[in-house]
Amino acid sequence: MSEIKKFQVTFDCAEPERLARFWCEVLGYVMPPPPEGFTTWDDFNRTLPLEKQGSWFSCSDPSGVGPRLYFQRVPEGKVVKNRVHLDVRVGTGLVGDERLAALEAECARLVALGATHVQTLYADEENESCIPMLDIEGNEFCID
Image 1 (cartoon, rainbow, N blue to C red):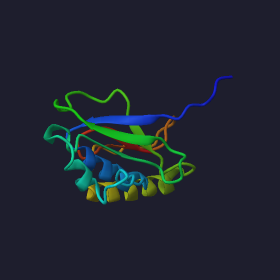
Image 2 (cartoon, rainbow, N blue to C red):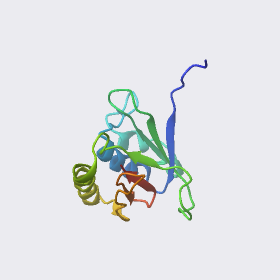
Image 3 (cartoon, one colour):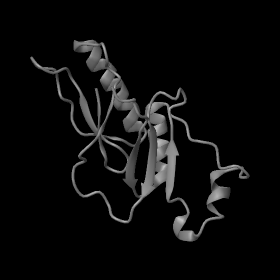
Image 4 (cartoon, helix red, strand yellow):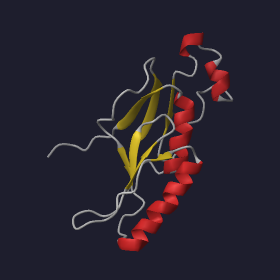
């Protein structure tokens, strides 16, 4: 059996720090401290060439369990649907109206952070309810 590997999820984006801060709020993640010798990330960024300033940012699960998220600035905008997306698991173990209420409450919280509610998919014979959404740069994710 092979060894389990740690991994990070990388987002191509326009505004790395802004998107990282959004996902910190969504997931309860934290931003790393600035590099040694710098009081703030702004202080660090000012030492870089202009084209490199703010070109990346990251955040991580404070418990160390979840993957690190890395955000890198790219020149092109998002054009098509994501091939991979995150599912934010807020309804695990819940069913029916209780699950839907938990999903709707989280949806309202995330909309207040700048996310977009795409639609609510209601439970049927095979699937429980979930809510597809867009983050602040239009990347798809689901609350389930």
